[in-house]
Image (cartoon, rainbow, N blue to C red):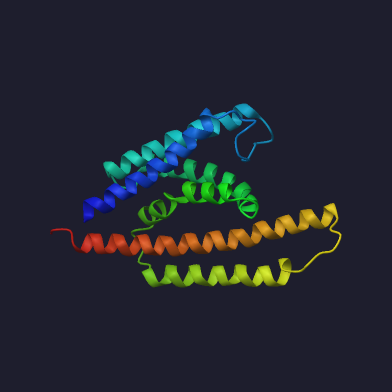
Length: 199
């Protein structure tokens, strides 16, 4: 059972790596929208290369664990920083098409595992993750009702920009809430896995 869980984790990391590799090999003009670093293409290409290298190293570390040393921390920070910049763009476009929702999910697959590995030494109960995730999702729902879910007639460009910002904030609430709850689920699996490990 422990081996199956380990293989599933590696497959999830590899899926994210393949998605990043797909971006690198695509024509930029036909690729999905992403963070553009002030429209400097070489910076975007460097970010893709660093993100791919970091996820490949992190995948290797899932295969051959060696704790959370400096190499692991640097790779994780690079991957999270670049991925979250792209996810920030995609969280608006998720409401316009399923492609960006899929991209957000695929690039988020390793994040709960990375967070669990990084904070495994902290004595945080699994239930705390579930409660925190639920509360943040409720806040997103309330934000939607108060600020967004209002019909606007003859919307102006200024109102459209404002609505876009509010939509993205709402999606960030939902994204963070779900991510924290999934991290709690991963933590629970890790605890059960450790409990069944031979002494």
